[in-house]
Image (cartoon, rainbow, N blue to C red):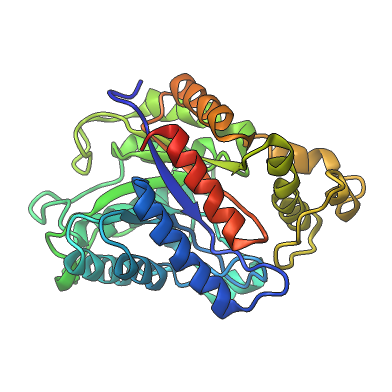
Length: 363
């Protein structure tokens, strides 16, 4: 269980609304970040997606820099950088640069999902993303950033060996150890690291490395609780990159808050349509809200249940109601941080949702 009351954070995929331009979407991200900063949110997490017509969070560290420059005190984290898409050295240099420019405000969330389609993943020269290779890349990145001493080489815990098997069923050898290359600008910055995941595999990597874990329950709610349990069961406090020897858990959830429940449900039809478009293979900018609360079903004939399951971890209603239900979830799962993602076609309605929730939460 968390040692204190959970904190509230923003999770942003930088969506673009139908009828709006990319320039406007990026400006709206900055506006939302300023709102979150003024409302007292703990952190602003920015996702990574490539080749998407719905989400513009592709250059994650660039967007982090924009948010940091536009705000005064809020923490800003990658939510997350999909490490198999990138060189650990480049990630360390970029995050390390931000950490030097904005001391104490930069967080490093790392994930292993592609964040895109297979064609775009190939164009990214994506590397192996199995749990063991991912763990090695995480350790290498953190070594560059100074969280691991060069005198004590970081190695992948043996507990991760069964997750990867070769053709003969035997565990593969770990990748080569970290060499002498240096991310000079990042050395010693040691930003707070998190592992983001939607499954037990990601949770096991976080636990075996003794790192904080954020579960992506906003699109994979069915696996979330099992992932959290697995994380805590394998948590290794002795790992050299562990923050403080304690497990730390956060969760991403969908939410829409409005003055009335009826308006919140009306606005939330945009998020349901976005999920339906992803599952139905018909991505597009965010749809305007619909008076027909079931209109999204027409986008996924025969797949309605899949959409409902994907969006099961959604909190829609008035501020007091949503805040109470989020606190109940935090208590049940032992969360220290709740990351809220809110999709609305109208930027003002989106900002208002976060404002109302922050007021009810008491941040």
